[in-house]
Length: 231
Image (cartoon, rainbow, N blue to C red):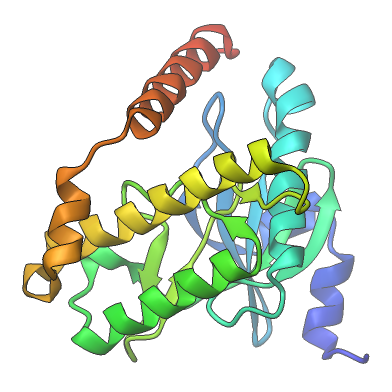
């Protein structure tokens, strides 16, 4: 399939050229965080997620795994409207992603239709066999001026296993439940009038898996920060 000259130029840019074409940085690099930039070439806009200018063991060993996880997750969800499309893997430590013209949910005042659409979008992602795994803070829910929702940042995604893999699919279902819980909390925070009795019952329940997942995540973050390279 042919592409526009601007898109063709983006597909050919080096890491240095992509950073030179950056119009805005959504996130600057940290010891365990990528640079995330909005890159423009003519009429084309893409998001460049890049660990390539980082130093130390994290950039060399862990970043390629994270890039692979997100790229493979986006490729799996390429037909889901509301999930950004994978444009290109720059190399093992960087990728280009479709730009979604939304803002974090908490910065917007979306209407009721946006919540309904977001619920359908998350259900579609789950039916496709992917649990997001990192929706608890709400920052990966975006919405545009037309109340169109997006879900971004699939580094922590969990994929459904084969039918015979019952133990893994139990784990997958726990992550699906955690995603659904995050959506309920989003409504509770920004549109409490949309909560129903089932939502309130779900909010009152705090399973052992969710508590253990939070504790594990906090421990991993502490360890990586402790041993990550510093200037």
